[in-house]
Image (cartoon, rainbow, N blue to C red; front, side):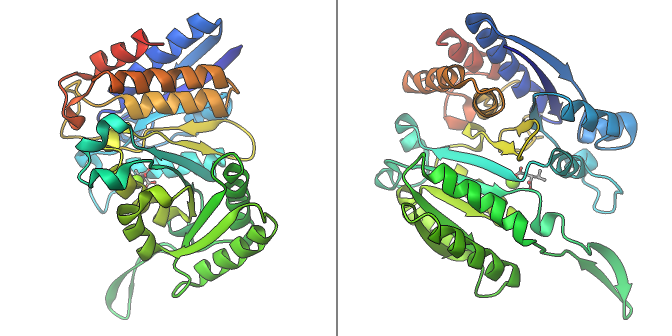
Length: 352
Ligand code: IPM
Ligand code: MG
């Protein structure tokens, strides 16, 4: 097959890990007889530096016109001024909105060989394999009004947690659909004891749950969920939640897998290209050193093959190669090893 993939390496360690995922995809292309065309664009801080904007229209249009988008990471201290007009993260949010990718899939799996590396007790981690489905284009990140002003002589800042019924429904529909391919359990996470938007969320979840009697639905408050992720993570299957809760819970969940560097994500809309990115950030402290863990991005490229190109066998072959490399002791620094970024990718490519 032929596919056009837009690369947005971004800032910090982004370019280092994306380069390795591209090598993996090129290997897959030659092994399976596909042609992948890569176009590289700027997004994030690097785009602010070059164009004065974190995401320019042309870049968004190029992303929209491709089959899939592979992103590294954005942000860094250079662009962290709290009163700056533009920030790298704004580009990322505009990209998610512009691609209409409302569903963010973040699978969390603990590799048996990395159990000792997690700060949790080993018995808690056995069998951990769940998926966080994070709503990605609504909620506090996008609600209006938003901004700063002066009211009654006081400086004020406002963010709005807003959800329309259709935004909640489409992500919950997907949760139940995915549950049927997994262990048939959906944990819907909200804060319905306090937030109106969460009460609407829970009402819709209950209704959709009733339409799926074969899938178990449990409602959980977000504070409880943050505790359960640590005390009983193996009981989770699909966690579906609003944008901000999902952001926070997935960083917490990454600790289970041993390192943020391990986890991939896929962001999907109802049509159009998907957006694929590791869940880690730009890690400015190690940027440019070539030591970042490329696994999160390499696994994101596997998700790209599966969800945007329908290449299940190819996707599974990447996941298997990653799995084997870890089983056989290959480790980057973040999980207690000595391999640098490129060597880790070499180990994976060798096993494809
Ligand atoms: C993530 C990140 C982003 C988010 C930031 C960089 C805007 O933390 O993808 O989880 O909050 O969505
Ligand atoms: Mg985050």
